[in-house]
Image (cartoon, rainbow, N blue to C red):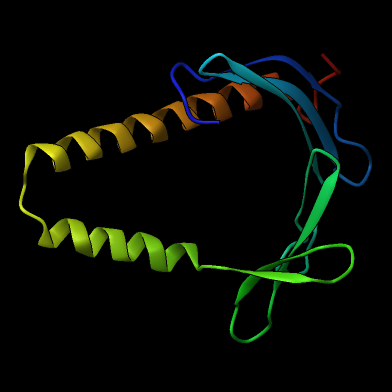
Length: 139
């Protein structure tokens, strides 16, 4: 949800269980909107690690093809939607920025992107601070 002043509140975190699994629940607010978020993390030695997204009751599992490392989302019926490689997009944007003149619009765009990254890091820091660690008791 893009918008101004992103924030999280109502953070509830379970202490890691014997396997190291951890659950986080929180409310994300931004630009006058809000949504409830649940994150369930489990340690896994196998690569790539399992990742599943669920939004409004719809679920998609991330699929990474061995060898090519191509990404896609798979629906429960195994229908797949290919995803672009995020690294390719980042490198292309970096090269485009190198080629572009240092116009005011480019400087503003960089400032906005830097602010978005800083905001996300602040939100991640708030979640980490709210999460009990193995040697601590629950919240």
